Image 1 (tube, rainbow, N blue to C red):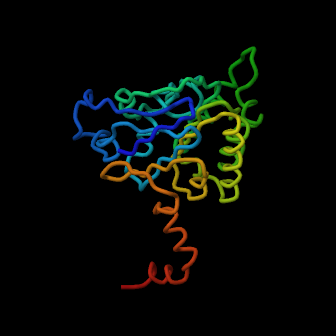
Image 2 (cartoon, one colour):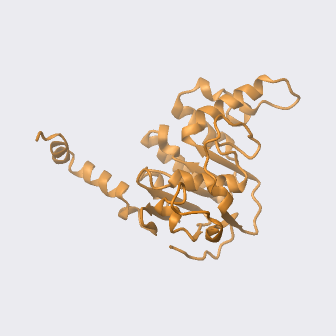
Image 3 (cartoon, one colour):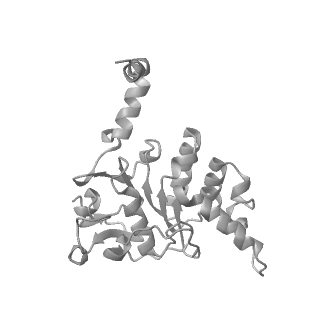
Length: 255
């Protein structure tokens, strides 16, 4: 299990699986390789990437970290308590978060697959009478449902993330163009300069490119660290762009 100690203090130092409490490693989610062999995962004080092929347990692990921190399983800040469908795993009950000395003043769990539910809940809450400002005012002042998918994603990143916080992002690139992904990297850097920490699950080589970070690559045999250039995401994308015609011929060649 990859492990390293970072001298710089942060909000969340590491995640530990309390293996002696796990009822069985033969059933979901504990049978997943990344969970089955998990002991302690040290988190980078700036950016930790959790990547790998589909089905390796990325979202399951991200969800467990977020829920153990106090976020809603479907996303949002700690103030969101809605539940569209209770489908999250019980993994969070078996992980222990090792917190740093710093106290986060902000935080957000961004989950692409349930972002629509989050936006709907915001609209419903804003329709209820109350003395305080509308929730949507913290997201740019416009309903997220009145924007394109990509615009609403980016509105959350640019308007709601205030710095000095822990931001857990599960596949944030889902609706972002390559240009917007680069803009998001710039936004991340600004927030990191404001003492923020990110944990990101992504398939995007662009988003994985933040230089001061660590990449954990999930496999059926556990978790390993890799450089960006060693990830399948980077290698395949580079090979395709450099040899597009040859790769297309091979992909479309008839038997």
